Image (cartoon, rainbow over all chains, first blue to last red; front, top):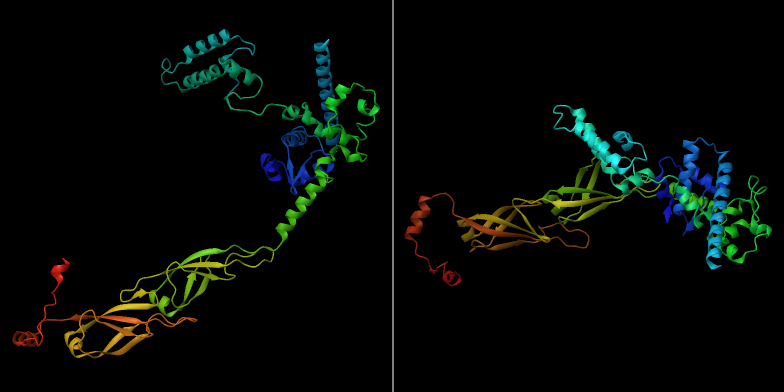
Length: 95
Length: 351
């Protein structure tokens, strides 16, 4: 598991204030490992995505939830599409 | 960063391996250092072409470069779209769509509306994490992880940082600092106050109790590193090194020294003056002494300290014959010992 310190060490431009705000807003998730927050690889990539949106693409803090929400919907649809595709292939193989 | 290998070789990105090989050979002939002596730019071009060919002639490396996994120098690069790799996977349900103003109104969840009735399909993507989060009545439900036993990530994070802040703000004791101090022999015997100059220019008065030995560590409370946030200072730990002495030797709490005496003092005894650590002392030597005889001066060794009594000073006599003396020679020539004895008797047996 990845601790806050490791996460902040991976991204020079990540401050704990930003991270705390994004966690409070639900943009990034973490879990509790005996009281200390810890992160999965997907959370690390999520932080990278947010940093790229905020700093490289100049998405401001107000627009960030909109962008993330749209992305989350898009990925949810992609996952569902993939499952439907897999289910259709199963059906085709069985019949 | 090296230039794009396709540009270096001047080939299109879909060039065949043969075209790449031809382009490389042409450049290699053109810029070979042996054919262009004294032209460093030719050598640089030759090296660049060789590196580009190295990358593009290997189908595996070329494919990885095309996918952006390695750069033109062949080094690993983070694949683009790192988040997508996870989000497309089932792990992506960690960040499901949110029940919020922008998504809730238009997003038609088949599970929620009940139109999706395929038991197999719903079984596969009915991830407990995702559905649990989705059905949370609170607006922030998408990130309420049921595995985290009720605490939201926000709570975890806030508590952790609060605890960390408190720990940093709490008074903390300073570090202990270690020093080394050379103690003169007599200070270790009698006790003394030595001055230790610290690296930062401060000086410490170090009270040396009598009887300290090399390797002993004195702890000066509160003389180490400063404390944080009002915490107490650390201690200064001072390792002592007792220096040798030309006259005295330590033997636990006792001291030993050789005392030179004249022939007359050895034979007749009498008062002599002995330099003890606590000052000159008149000692009456017993008559009939010899080299090696020990005389104990009680309480003249290491000074008493606490419950420990003072040690003794042992004198070992050394008879010194001294400068040539005509009278002594005349006396010895006519002298017949009362009890003739051979001081070397028995030495043969030991040899």
